[in-house]
Image (cartoon, rainbow, N blue to C red; front, side, top):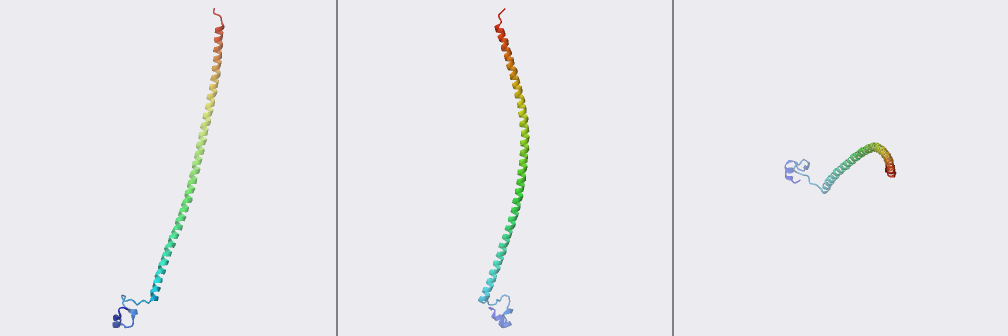
Length: 138
């Protein structure tokens, strides 16, 4: 002990009761044992940190998987709703198209009838013109 004079005055040969400022001489084996203990403690602390990081990553992965599954369900539901809405719109448009086609068919029939009447009028005018041209003047 570096405070040998203190020991000589108070309790010679009693290094165990040395004041706190006095350290026991460390032998090489005690030094390496302390060093191994410190390194071992550091390894354990590092391993605990790594374990916590890995556990946190597992939890993050679990949360992300749950979020992905939830998101997929919502996107799938939205896609189904969109598809249903599109089919409703297609149905409505088909009804409107059918109605317009029916109206067009009616208009075309009236045009055909008007064309037939016009041809009849033309033939009648043509016949009347021929009759007027063939009659001698009085």
